[in-house]
Length: 400
Image: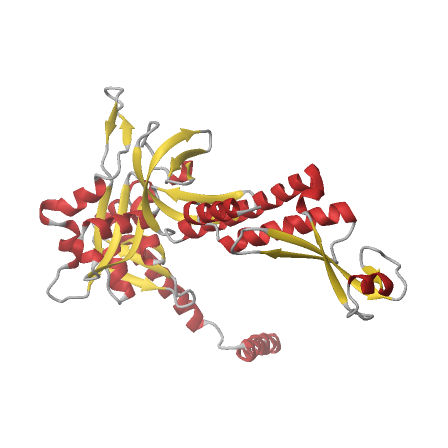
């Protein structure tokens, strides 16, 4: 080995971002492995690297003994004295070995060890690189498709866009440039896996940060997002500046900011009349976030009106929302979408009741309360009532 080795190390470090010390350790490990393959053990081997010349040297270390039992580990005092009269029993003497003598099999083993070390290092570098982009938007190129994924090239790796992470009705062709949200990066023995999404609720949040300056600088904060991708999204926002209207800022003049966000998506649906696929726009409802849970739920049920919000005393995350009779279907939404999104947005399990339904429930509760009041207060009162009835029966019998 020579200065060419040093140059190779420099290239690997600069272009592949592989630490030179890690490569040197890999070479030492491989040489020790090759030594063991030839001599059956590696306990006596020492490997040194010369930073100036780029050379590796392999040494066998033998202990000076009176009687030799293992010539690979020991040397007799007589032979040691022949080398130098200064040696004594117990001294350690190093003998240089030539890596060239290890042969073709040993060299192949060394190469495999180095390559495996390099693969692990490159995998770690790739993992760290994309881990930094977790929970961010990246732009990539659609490479290929299979039954499970669309594979998106992000530069040095193919990310996986699964069916559930795609927007229904959105289609792509090879070489299309698309934006994706990186929601998980995994490092495993087979390689680095990057999972991306276009349907994730956080994708909406990140796009708003890109497109709306007040969201980017923190003046307006997006508190939560509930999304059914390609159809409808609810976004809860609040302003940290009393002079800035959170909802108006997100919507923008004549809906300009919302249009910037929805223009990032390209879902289509099949028109039943024409039989053609036509573009559709994802609807985004912007909701004002407030500290009061009842008021927040009230806002989240919009566009339906709400009469009152009641919380379950036994389950703090369960709420009953009462709406006017003529607003019940609007509050629930098509296939339950409105109340479902409101529940995800607020973090509460929400039951929608019409005003008439709630009145009936109140009547039932009142009847239950009356029955409870009329009932004996406890078991003792109940027993006394039974005894009184029995006594009255005995009196009646005596009168007869």
